[in-house]
Image (cartoon, rainbow over all chains, first blue to last red):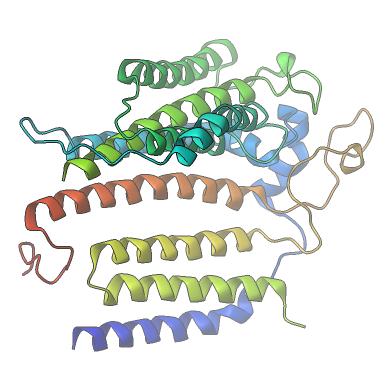
Length: 230
Length: 126
């Protein structure tokens, strides 16, 4: 009965949306705020990647909110899966030698690649969130290879807090010096399409990369250990 | 020939319906979480496809031909809409957070009730 009602609702939704499909046609030219972002993006920010300009500069305040949401969800996972005293922890089966050696071999290049992605966020596809996810995947490899390894919690939480704080400080410096939160100084933009360009955009994206990387690493450790305890 | 935009819209619609069906009809909590992930993938595809511009390239201005002139940095090239792409990046990150939270709650539920069947977890039913 319940399945039947669900199926009827899905069918209704599918038919309704299907009839809207012919109106889903591509636009010929950009309009409104998107046209301004594309045409003036390089003039105003010198960043080659317009998506990065939108995320870090034009809508930088929203990205700060997004970082806060990610932080809250990681805190929530840590709270839900928090350690209970007196639980007997069975010894996990060690990973095979191939996984261990492979992890030791792959860890440095993967970390380097993550750092490359978030440092070049204003020039190439990618950025802080993507680079942070790549860094966290290196940490996941490490955790899978050595099941009883513990990450340095103090270091992770310091990196996370300091990079979050530095993001707000960069924003406040813009408020004090230029009159707008996260404002980009037009005198200090540099040359278009170079690594040291685009003002505050690479600085903020490196901070976001460090923050996301440490947050997701802490998340992975909490989740792998919770799985072993149950 | 089928319009590529319509094709993207149709695939997004199919993904959304498959995700919703999984979330509604499956009784296993992990499979329901997977359904929500498929649903959000469909929504992401739909939003990115909204920013499609006929004949445009990616919004990354890394060639001098895409600018108006050597000294004028105004972009003249035909590129895709960057705003939906930025929105989807945000949505993906938030999706990771919510999925992690859902899985954490599922781990706790399993530890307490030793089951993942949503029909036996009747505590919150009315």
